[in-house]
Length: 165
Image (cartoon, rainbow, N blue to C red; front, side, top):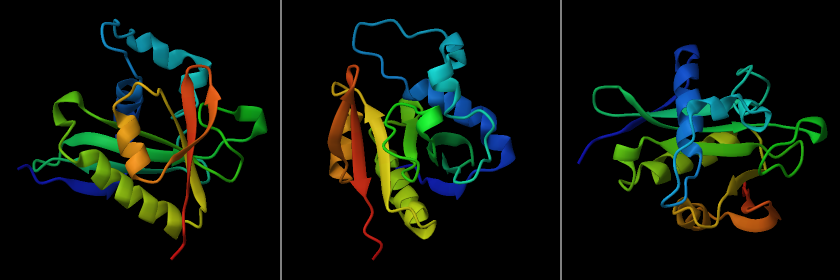
């Protein structure tokens, strides 16, 4: 079993966050993966562009050779800059992805647990996200306490209240 480490992002991880944003795009079985140009779409670019704003927090999972293999991040949006999963200006939207060859090994749970701790320590009281109900990650989100609070197109908006205990 590979040993993973979770660390806070550095400036050198911005390109990796873009890659993880691409990996986070849900592709239904039998559908063709879009080109990376999709990351230039306004509704996606806002997840990483100008990284380092107030409230931006990212964690990077690395393998035993310190190679990044997954990431989870939260970012605040507001009424004028909404995105998928947006609830309100005080609830950061969570994004997560793991490289395909590392999925199904508990890495998502590790990243989630660490980000929930980080979000609580930062004073946040809730997290939100958007997920296609056909995405296998939905089970992970539900197991982490996220509940469906709305529908946006074909995706579910989900939220988790953080008990600051």
